[in-house]
Length: 88
Image (cartoon, rainbow, N blue to C red; front, top):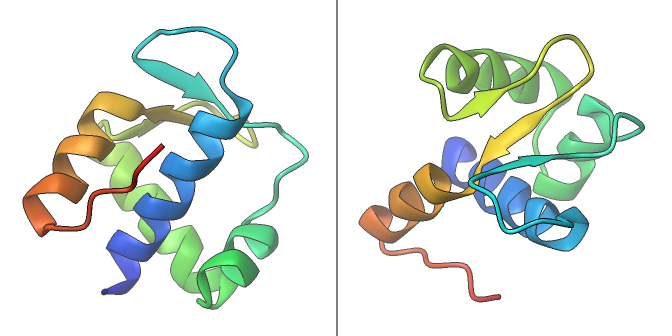
């Protein structure tokens, strides 16, 4: 799996884990850093930063500053199209 899809899969798992409502968007804990995401995905921090910025421009991710929002529906459809469904 490429870097983009590894990050998306990790964000989807985290969004599902920290979700407390059934909405389309999930807020991840602000304590979660890019370094943490890099370690979870096996990527370096700068790659994670670039990917997060790209995904924010594409409206897959939202939020300002350290607040990271994940659009679960969009991420699930991207992963499904790649053939990499993440089961709940």
